Length: 361
Ligand code: GLU
Image (tube, rainbow, N blue to C red; front, side, top):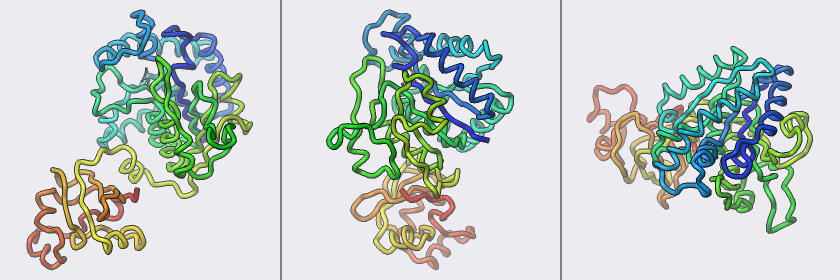
């Protein structure tokens, strides 16, 4: 079954500051209904809660403090979800609201649970409408923008397509042709350097997080589009293969679920530095990480926590679940297997990070 995630920016869903664009929502809802008729599953990642709350409070510019933004989101979110339900009522489609936090998805069983809820909603023929749980997300644990959230939802739900629809018509090659780049096969540094931020009073993203989103989603095997959400019938035109905006080709060798979770949903709690031999074993020979190559350990972490592995020049090369605590790593760093066996005689496995719990960055 084809499954698509449609991420809609505040600028597409509202007019001026904080007034919902009902005509636009109606148009999007009729396209969603058409996709459901074609048996395509649809998830919506909807921005607009903060923007709508700003409108209700008659604020002219985006508040700078987190509590003010959260108050706006708290006011705007319930109105936003009601607008979606009103838009889908004519098609007898129900919406299901899901509010996610980054911190929640970092915990493996919550991540698996969120996927199960999404699958269940879709099998009930419900349209999940997803947003960040803005009113409770603290600064350091926020997704911060819905482009990243959209990509994480696409990865979590194993979507086949992600559409990032905003007022940005696509990735523009500013220093080169000045035109929209139609297709990106591989997101390299040249593509990343084309991305710029935003000056809009209600938006937070700009092109930088959209490219990051495309990176996360394409690595999960999900084809990604960045296109103008105000263009007529944009969703159906994209799904029908029309070349509009920028299309990012999905990776032909997508990461498996556990490795995606490690690479994109984690905030590492520490790091270990390894020598060149261990780097080669990880990158070229695809082996597990052993203690012998460890030269340094930073941070305070427990066994089972996710940490980064960095090279001698400090570049993060891998991320994984460490089988030892930072305290234990200090004891075993640089030691041979035989010495570690003597120190931890109750253990049966001695990899510091097993290959299956490690992803190359
Ligand atoms: N979650 C925010 C909101 O609903 C939007 C963040 C974004 O647009 O990227 O207002």
